[in-house]
Structures are given as C-alpha cells and as structure tokens.
Length: 296
Image (tube, rainbow, N blue to C red):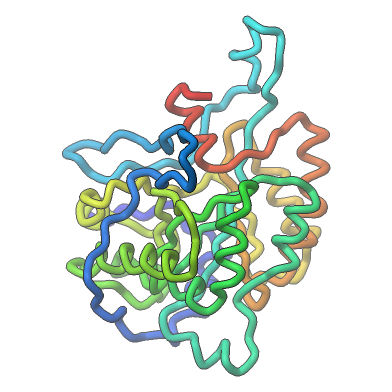
C-alpha cells in the first residue's frame, strides 16, 4: 500500500501546475550518490551525518530534529544552543520546462538567496538537476557558500509514486538513475560537496521507492512544517502559517522559485527576526540530522 507523506495543499497546487511536463527522464549512466562530501582541501572534514538504514535496509526518512529547547548540552558548560530550526528551499524545475525558461519564466530567486545571506541564515537548498543545468552559476554560487548546503531533489521533479498531485511519474527501474543524474548535473555546474540527502518530488514516497534508492546511501528528508508559499500572494498568511507551525527541531519547506513562490523572500524577512526573538537558532538540515544522532 502506498504510504504518502504529508500532503500539503500548497504542494498539491505546485504539483498540479507541473503536470504539463509529461515526458520521462532520459536514461543516463548511473552515478553513485555521495555518502559524504569529498574534502575540498587537505583539511579534515567531519563526516556528513546521515541516518542508519530503516527496516530491511530501506532508505531512512528524516522529518524533524530533536524536540528540545537546546539546554541539554548546556547543563554542563552553562551555554545555550537555542531551539534549532532548519529552513529548506526547494529549487524546482521539471525536466522539460526549458521552453518556459527560454520564454522568460524565472525558476530561480536570487533575491531570496541574497536576503538569506544578509540575514545570516544557514539553509539547505533541495535542488533538481534540471534547475542546476538552467542556472549553473547560481547553483555553483550557492554550493560554494558555507552558509548553505545543496541536497538532491531529483533530476526531473517527476514523482516516485503513481499518485502524487498529478505529477508525471518516474518508472521504478529509473528512480535511482534519476537521482544520480541530479548529482551529475551538480558536478557539471561546479557544485562542490552536494549532500547525501534526497527530497522526494511532491514529498511522495512508498516502500518501493525507499527500496529502489537504498543502494545510493542517501537519507530522505521530508519536513514537519509546510509554509504554504507555493503560488501564494499573501505574504502575511504564509508568515502566520510558518510561525504557528514551528517547534524545536522543525524542518520548514519553502521554495526558491520566483514564478512558483513570489512572496517567499518577504516571508523570510518577516519570519527570521520573529523566530530569533523566540529563541530559535537557524541551522542546516545536516545540523539537525547530527543533533538527532547525538552529534550536536
């Protein structure tokens, strides 16, 4: 039986908007997903935290970090880490939206990235391989900025289940190749050290999908807070939805596409100072996974 993750209305709208892109991803030679980023220099690096495989070796699924206020570690040294929260941004572009991009539609959002930099907010960008191909300079700039980390959102942004908001579907035998093709696109764009994290298009997965991706070594990353920014025009409503939904350890899903999520930058500018005033500290997904593993 197909077990779908949280079906947010906003993602449903986004998925429906992408149904016009109905061809299957082209076959490519498989490329192993990184189990950990390769060192960019001779300096030693801490291995990227991942989750242990699930039952029967299935791909593990991460939805949120520890529900603590950050004081456990500080009980011994008198410090406070704050309540951890991760903002994540899906850089969505489907495999055959090239003509729309060529006609002037923007699937990137450099103003959002600039706002995150100005606010000094670490973030994880779940990027499709097709997005990296369309915006290689931006992909490389984000990937080389230590404030951010890039994770895998598939190459095609086609669904990995048969029933996912009307998205076109990747055949079961092609799922691993689709994921690996995204890593190849990151490499061609000059993205260093992409993370071994994967977000299913539309957030839809089942046991078959988890089995197919198990050999890649990725951790599937979902969320527990839906921002509702997809195609939203009321920034205040999206802001309230985020602020009402967050808890310590939350993973918030947002979007890094101007055409699909035009108010996200405004939302970030409102959400960040308010959450900081509430004692939250922004971290990347890798930090939350590490905290779940007892590494933070």
